[in-house]
Length: 286
Image (tube, rainbow, N blue to C red; front, side):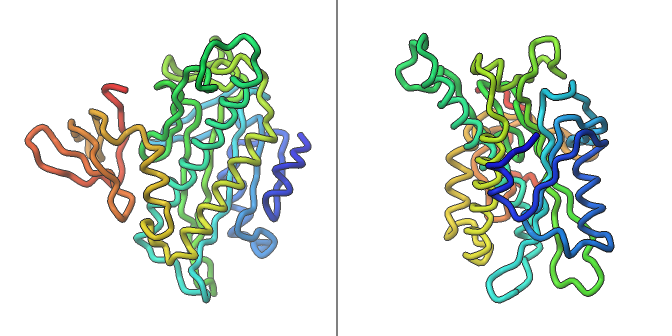
């Protein structure tokens, strides 16, 4: 896969024909003896990942050539080389999720506009593309992309940490390929063969651009515009949710806000607001 648009969007992009995990590959490259050759924004991508990982320790496998596994190396730092604040790392998966949501929206919109038989007046094909906190992209309630971010250990003599942000995007899965009954793909949504390079380049450009704005504003989600951008895309806000928390606990309530640390604020059924930093969220209505 040549991916000229995507290669032009980042300092380094390596396409591998097959691999166990692009996150593992990028982590090893970014922490190994050749780490200096992998700058901020470097990418490893494949359409054949055999040991993909998701949240809560889940694993998944997709047919060859029908999905993209994308891993991006992020080495965030503030202007003047100041270290990235630890409390700001929680925004990185949200920034990636926002960028992927926008890329999928544009792909869906473009496909709908190109179809001469669509009856939709809004040009979207009648589907809704939203971010589910913290890092899934849903199309009309069906998952089309999941994102898993992994913090790397701080290397010796390094002043800043690094993060590998992995995303799995369903491109051309059909009904028989779907890993769950709540999944979908760009092909199923649009009825059109997606342009993998265009969607990938759109995601990478949006992700790194939004992250750059975040760091240039001192990792302030409000002044950088990141908080409002994520909130506008997040279909979790205002929804009734069930959150599976660590320790086999469960929280039921209404998701009201994302706080300055990227945590989801949920008003439970007793009227108390709880901040969720990590958990598996299910929308109980859309």
